[in-house]
Picture 1 (cartoon, helix red, strand yellow):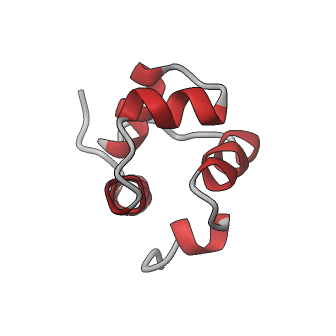
Picture 2 (cartoon, rainbow, N blue to C red):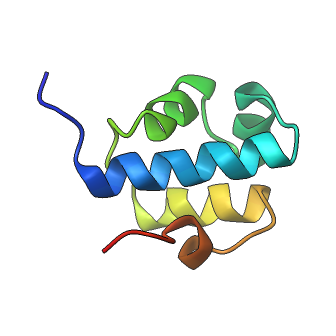
Length: 74
């Protein structure tokens, strides 16, 4: 498996940081975003290139914006 793309890795770490700050488990975030827990895990590890719609679902579940989840990505 190739190394994760830096932008995906940063997006995933931003998702995890927000999730941790809100004290949510991956399972709870997945439930709130109507996604699978394994999907959230792969996003946080930076190994999944997610769609805009999934990004919006995750942002909404975390009560933030996609732009905030993209913070630090150049």
